[in-house]
Image 1 (cartoon, rainbow, N blue to C red):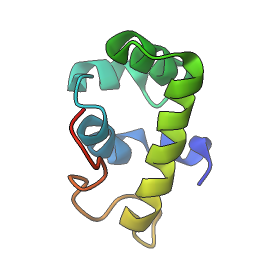
Image 2: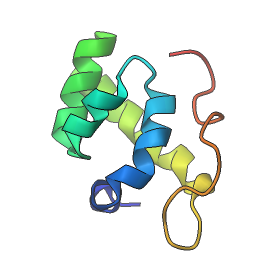
Image 3: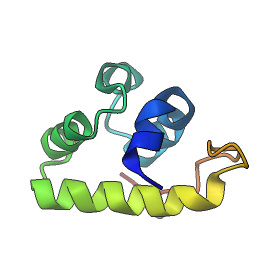
Image 4: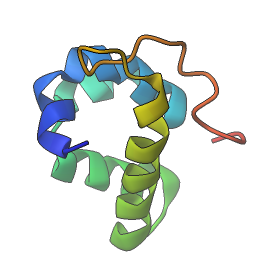
Length: 87
């Protein structure tokens, strides 16, 4: 799945993002508006990780999302199982 798809449908994906990155608030996700660079920076600051690690987290997020998507390409299932362990 290309990031442009997530960005274009951000409101549909934000619940899953909130579940995956629990330290980032809903208001912060609203400001991010699906912009990948903004999300990378927020992950770096909130979790104290490198840019490379933030990018890897986003890659993993996209991979795990694939199984949650319906025919219209947006999540249809609960996203609680996206993150294997705590934030």
